[in-house]
Length: 255
Ligand code: IPE
Ligand code: IPE
Ligand code: MG
Image (tube, rainbow, N blue to C red; front, top):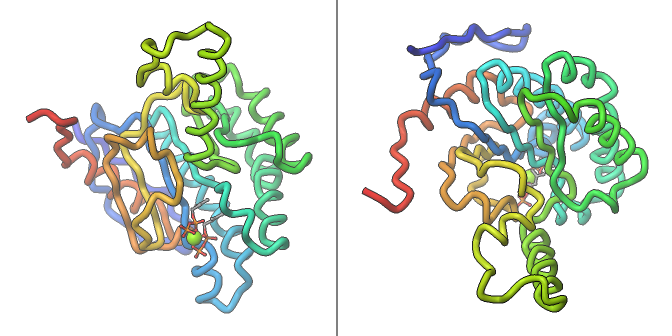
């Protein structure tokens, strides 16, 4: 049975007819590279951080939509291990965003039964960022609705090197035999060990690359790209991505 969700439109949004999604074929795990905030702002003669601020509002809407249609895990790339290269004021702003986001939105996440998680090297984040995110994780840890997974200071290569070191040290300690190392053991050493693999990867802003995001976990994900900058992304784009996903044939190497 196709399901149609009327989009909650704000004044910026034109009315869009829902495409109709197959209720029993919603991707379980959707990962998004939210890109294009800086260019969105630049096109409007605004500082890059204005794009990040606008992008935060989009996160709220997309989380609502994902939780409404029954996505199980939504992983959002918020800050990469390479993003530290950016000007200090921009990095500072990006580190403050989770604080702002959660200070206004945590009650709704709780009400929606959303569980907040993170992947990435968390311990080196600024104190205020860690505090806000830890509080959200603590307050939502027993929720069993949508898992909202923020990739914060995340880099896939770092993650994999870390996993290799963990396994190597277990071998050294005699806990693991080299012949026992397999894909499943490796996966268990990744930040994503408790999550299912993404079914669908979305990247906005026209770039078609992974930028060090979930290199292992996306092995069999479907990719969906759009020219739209993240601050302009809305429910109708998300629905189109899901609709296209539903019309793809995944073979996983079979026939
Ligand atoms: C994505 O937008 C947000 C982050 C990387 C934190 P960008 O800031 O990369 O925007 P562009 O790609 O420069 O337009
Ligand atoms: C990827 O976007 C990181 C995030 C969206 C958080 P970037 O804008 O940093 O990636 P590149 O530099 O275009 O590859
Ligand atoms: Mg970018």
